[in-house]
Length: 271
Image (cartoon, rainbow, N blue to C red; front, side):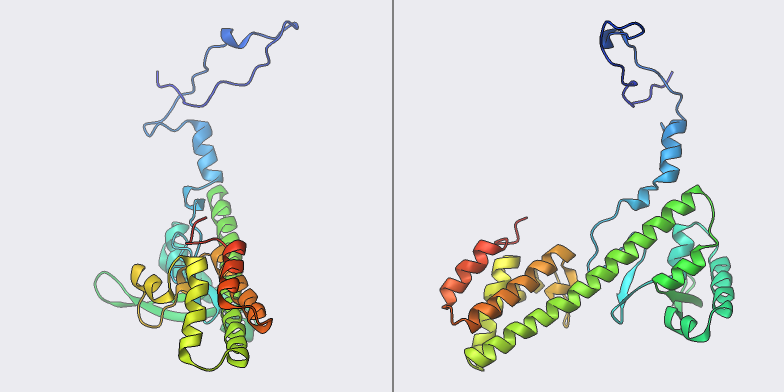
């Protein structure tokens, strides 16, 4: 007999009638399938699919597991990703999307669905659709089943997290502008001054300069450290930039500002 690895049911110890000492309890076996999954385990897998175990997203990579990505400061996914995750024929997903668009108000359809294309394994151009969170919600309404419900919940939460990340990314850029404005109005317009302040903040929050960070992480031309930072680190970077701006305006010396930032934020990228 194959034995299940779950712990035995919890039984209280004591002398009361009907209670059995734990030392007398024998493990209860539950039949497993060929993959070692019991009926209970398979039920849990349906309710909580493995794909729900996701890493934190970045602007560059998005949620890889669900194919959610950033485009034009919004979160999107594709019909191919829905086909893959929900285990449906892509042509059927395309058909459902087109039917959904036809039933929507014209402006809504344009804002939340975008025709696109890709090349298949035979190098043939094939149609697909990109959709926002709202577009996905309408299309996914028709997906049924216990496993489908788990994936729908995962998508909704991932979309929310991605949108929060995008908003944080935008705010962090504004924080940099605020710091640059403080430098220009209080320290001067020399490029050296801007680079010195930016390097100081990046070393405090990221552990290295922006240039070194790009090289260490293989970022391409036009990509910045913000594109591969998770939300919490983006918030740290934004807060450090804004605090440094206030300290510059208050005429605090560079070394003292650096000490204050190191006291308030993680140093060297350590969690």
